[in-house]
Length: 526
Image 1 (cartoon, rainbow, N blue to C red):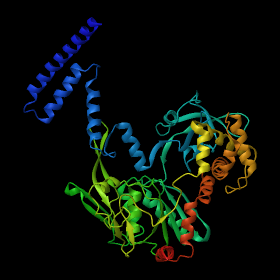
Image 2: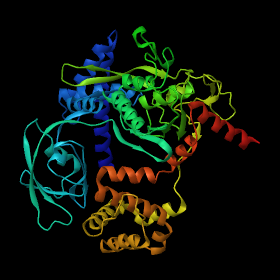
Image 3: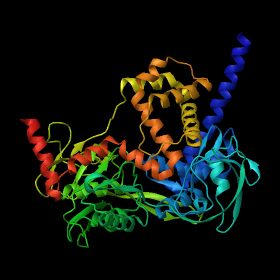
Image 4: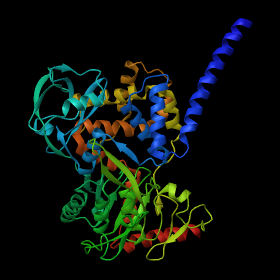
């Protein structure tokens, strides 16, 4: 025992001596070193003495990542060439491929929807088609990323896909030719009851302003008298496009967003340039905690100028602007260079509110108070707080009970739901996307779940009938009627859209919508 202790002590002692020698060398040479020299010295020590071998490129990459991470800003990061390419595709809406939404269901790549006018739609692909082979290779077990890599390629090149389709006995071969794809910013639009138009904007890419403008014109010709602009789940995109969409609804000279940064070039107030074409159109903007960046600029500007009523849940609070600086290595640095403020002076950024960018709280509920152009009281404090809160933020006890029963088998439940929906498409497709989900349909899904090994109390499933019916309705509409049918179903089932429709009912001008909310607030206070 004593000899083992002596060995341990000798090893520890030599380690301390060796460490002290290194430390003394480092201390002796650090006096008067510049930051660059110190960095080089630390890199040299790691390369020479670290227990594991680390190449110099790896060290520099780790140092770069660590430096940006230490800034504490999740929006500042280095983009390698692949990530930069994906960012460019998102902001431009353009990429080379087949124009098809794919997800892995039951282990197979399954078509959710072909994009309108894309190569996949022209080749005849439909929602629910399984790609069992791609380029002569079996696809079962491939990840979504691996499938997308097989579908991408240069313009004009082709790939063969073996397709299994519900209701078709034998698989068949389809040759798909890749082309230039433009991902539309306006994913859904519709004319609802009583002349209410609906536009769902999913991203602020380089064509968003034009797409929104054209869609409003189209809905107006169809009889639209009021509009719901849905920005829920829209994470933003190009600042110029957010400003452009706000410009559609404001008057020349009205501020849209203030930008404040450290250098003079990063400070500006962007204002409306063009007269609005639909000044009397009543407008409701829908937002939630997935609305960020340019979405918040649009919602904040229209709310501050009393041009629109904002409905939903408080937005994400991404109130900073990033500049992209290309690097010689083919990547780019995405660097936060400024913060955004609404025309009334509200900081959009949640982190900024936690610091010092906002005035002290004067509302009594933890958020600073501001005034719109017309004198209405609105809240700041990070993100855009809606005028009317709508949308569930917590799950019901029945939903929670179902989630507990499913446990870690939620992906398998999703596969069972898709399998059931594809079976309905093949055997007894309903007449329209707004069909009524029956008890027999819920029984049918339960039978599929049992076949796949689900075994829990049926009463838990029955108690969650409303959410189960919602899921069945949307999935069957997707596979039986395609993207348009799913959109129609989703709009019809959306409680937040229903709230917006009720607020727009009978409104002839934007002021009518604001007055309706003011009267509700007054009545609730009484």
